[in-house]
Image (cartoon, rainbow, N blue to C red; front, side, top):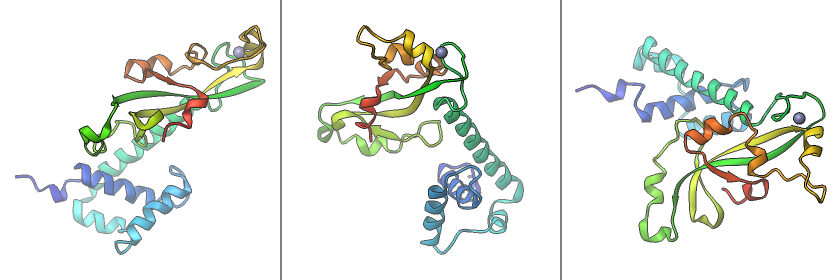
Length: 207
Ligand SMILES: [Zn+2]
């Protein structure tokens, strides 16, 4: 039988190595300050952050480097994805103009379950073990705690000229589902199950 304790690809080691990578990101190139501190503190409670050499001795350099590279690549991919979600440095999602831009927050959620009564099913414990193949996105409860799903926070980028064209008869622009569908990731996310639109106002109901 394979010796799991020396296999860095098990989910336990992946989680530990992720914390290791984060704890060593002292220049905050890939993870924010609070996350680096959180991982460092988690190690501190267990006697300190292990050194790279110590992990090398345990796994062998090749296996360790491959595992760490995987974690870093995944993180880079996530950061790039987040940039797209947030429309950072993006032109207007409707017409492509790069000036006079406005930003509207919204979300798309992939619903795991909509239950009326959680107590009777005791399902939340089992679901906490489910991880989305997108690093950093955890399952959240929606309005009234009856809905559980993965929420991606996004931003519609739209220029003032497009806003003006899309105002209703009261002169109000509403960043609803139809408007937000202009986000370049909209279709791709719908295709993988993120079909529940969460408006700016409803975002705060997700936690
Ligand atoms: Zn525009």
